Amino acid sequence: MKLVKIELFKLFHGGKVIYFYAGFAGAVALLILYLRMAASLEGFGEIFQTSIDTFSIFAVIVGVLWTLTSFNQEIQQKTMKNLLVTPVKRGEILGAKWLTGIFASTSVLLVLGLVAFVMTTLLFGFFTAGEYSSASEGILSFWKGIVQMVSSVFTAVFYSSIVLFLFLISNSLSISLVAVLVLRGIGEMLARSLIQQPNLFLYFSPLGALKVLNPISSHISFIAYFIQLLLILVYAVATAYVSIQLFERKEF
Picture: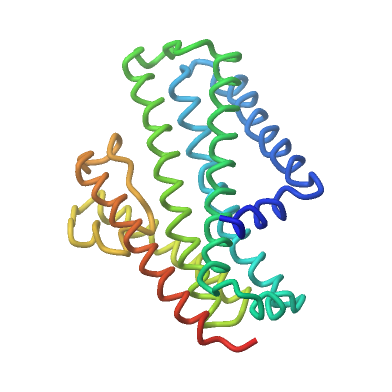
């Protein structure tokens, strides 16, 4: 926990991250303001869902980038070598950076959800129905957005563990980032395939975790969805464990 606190201090030190959160909140607010002018007939739920769907992937990217760049920076600045001579275990060092990346993604998602809820309420009304949708459809859209936020947290956990593994075997920041983007693209294609032709084996595999389907807007049941989230944690922990073993054998 001490190392996690140190990593969080690095994250918030200097106050620059506050400007980042403010800028992100402003971007979400601007999107909703634009939708108020361009899609004024939509209801509360539809606008909330659109905001979450648009920016949730950004939260995942933030966690992945923080995990990767903070680790790479330690190596480039030679501070990692100094840290390794201390009694702190290598697994704790890696785990602290992973958990901080997950925290970064989760905090961005919380900001997204709060700003989207407040701005949509102010500009569209609290749970108002759209011109072409009923109140029940609006509530359903709202919950689609909430589920998307939950899925994004687990996606951030999974991708952050993957990017650490990729970095440790490639020793390259750019290769790791490109590989993650390729995996995300594969996930998008597999998700479309699963919607058209359900395949539970593929859905519950690590490949299925690359893009989590929303059970409200797809054929996936909530039971299958929750099982997949648990499996994502298993895959992420397993990947993190392999990364720790690689890190233990790595020379700096």
